Length: 125
Image (cartoon, rainbow, N blue to C red; front, side, top):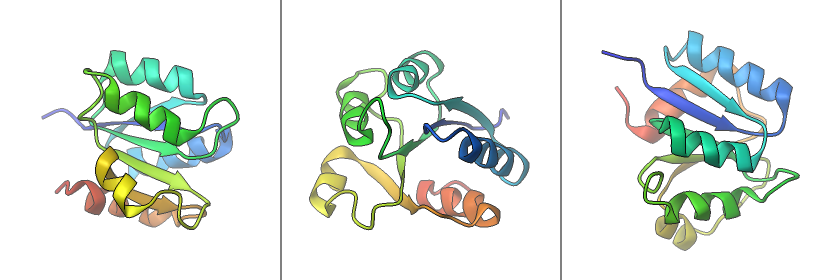
């Protein structure tokens, strides 16, 4: 069986490096990285990952705008998305249901617990 693939879309390069190491070594998954919303959307369309970790606040695009673009795209609409954010309430529960958010992971997070959080939110066993 092939390892699941997770796309991380976040402009913070150091944080992406930490996430990649944690998810690959502790979760056993393949991790793709994008540092911009436009590149992230293209990677999601071409690589079709099993899940996406999406930063809410990026300089080139708002993560929620990117999430909407993922949801209206026939290729990416069913990919589970977990939001990564420093905001306390980045999205209302109504918006979350409409956009099919798998969950929210607050920044800062515990790198050692990250893969377990992702497993729980995505119901991966």
